[in-house]
Length: 371
Image (cartoon, rainbow, N blue to C red; front, side):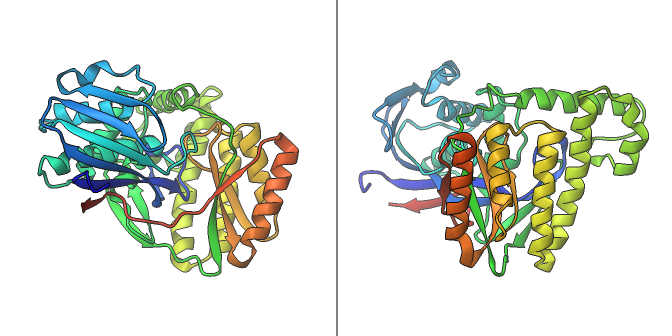
């Protein structure tokens, strides 16, 4: 790639625990992956952004003064949206050639979209000679996802993609963006990422519907108590006011409240190195996502259950928006191969789908290399 000037990457992510509470103002526990979207970039002296991919034959040209007109693209809409939000924030967009190389599996729940958005803005800022404000890049990337591609997401994915640190998980308060980095010391255990291989799309799923349900709940609560976000609702206050919610909103609120409690417990477990406790919390999180938030589905449930049934697995749960994608499992390190084989076979028998396993380290977020 010597013909390009810079190599700029942003990470995919996992979320240890704290699912569907980022947009409710809760604390979450993501980590950046070594699975990344990498942009090779060079200025081209034109008023155009030329896009190409290592994994696709497609080539797309975006006109810099028409960035708002590419929402319907099959490929290139994420890049166009990210560039547009950066431009609207007052940044200069320089004509360039971009080659995208993405190792984050699409539709996996590992936030390939966030990695694309964050790396696109970071690359544009780099060739314009601007210093990289990783938090601002994350915020503009979130804006692109919400306003350009139509997913009313929280900040977790983009923040983790931009601001991740090697061998650390982030305890991120999504309402304030206060972030504590915690060393990921798992002792004799490893994290295993498994894709259920059922295609899914957040835009077409019920993700936005769940977001609307939690907003409805917050509006109802604010008529009775002083509360800024749903994640501020304590378990005791939920029990006091739960009668005011109709179904299924009541179940959605119960998930948010109990998941926030699980994040608190998981923080203590991680700091103490108590992987058994952390595994139980993962199982409880999946149960809540299945029964209260109703965002799992037959295949993700079958995959989590196949993992949980293995004696070498302490816990497993679906991560991401739901309705497909990946699970994470805490597995005894010397039994990982045995775990994969048994889980693969049990899941195949239950669903007919062939699960896929990913190897990834916990990595840095945005990285920039001059070529």
